[in-house]
Length: 127
Image (cartoon, rainbow, N blue to C red; front, side, top):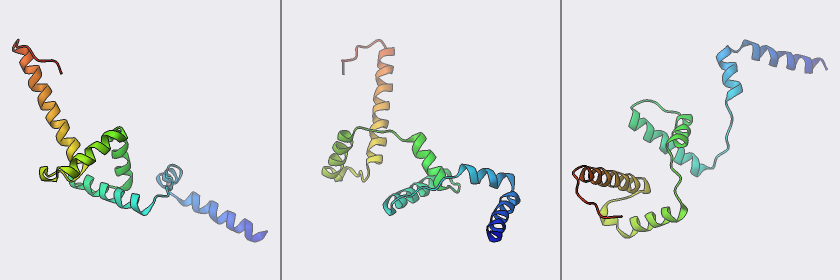
């Protein structure tokens, strides 16, 4: 019993010796179990974020970016995109992300041009 008190007491003293920030971090941080494959992808995302921002990034930054910047697309559409990329390698797309960014840019360009035509008073054919 004396040992238990000592261990509890030392654990309590350790918690009290932590700075308020460290105590806050201890309460807010969670441990996640992820597969090796997901770990590699998360690490790649951290690298991409570092390249984009020019700043050090953490796994938490990568997860936050995925949660705030990600778009969930229907499985069928993703499969169609992947098939298109595979069948049209000569176009230079290597990832879904590249293809989707390119497609979004082209669509935005088209819609902006369409809006400019409307402003000029010309008739625009229906989609």
